[in-house]
Length: 124
Picture 1 (cartoon, rainbow, N blue to C red):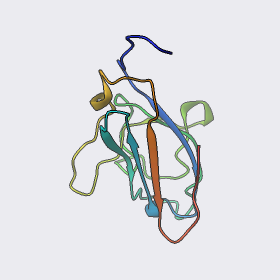
Picture 2 (tube, rainbow, N blue to C red):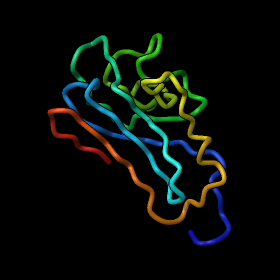
Picture 3 (tube, rainbow, N blue to C red):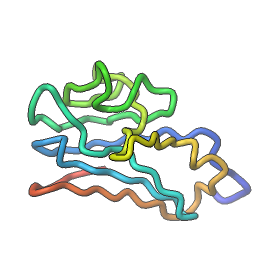
């Protein structure tokens, strides 16, 4: 999509399989170098099932993964019986916002970086 287009409201979906959501960290980086953290060591009351189908991140979501009422993995998108999540607070308690990408050029290569401790990680 070449042209003068700019990001106005970015939502992001991620499917990931991992035995323990606490081991996962995920970051999204735009072509211009803006980077936010989507997931930072998600906690889950249900224990180890970190398999999440189309986890839907939106600044206007119901809350970050691990926040009050949002602790139970898997973290599913609305069409799979879940909700929309805000990006998760980082270790310093700072709230990352997808709106930091507003005005960015959507063309080119964006980077999704996922770290998983001691286990393999699959993502899309």
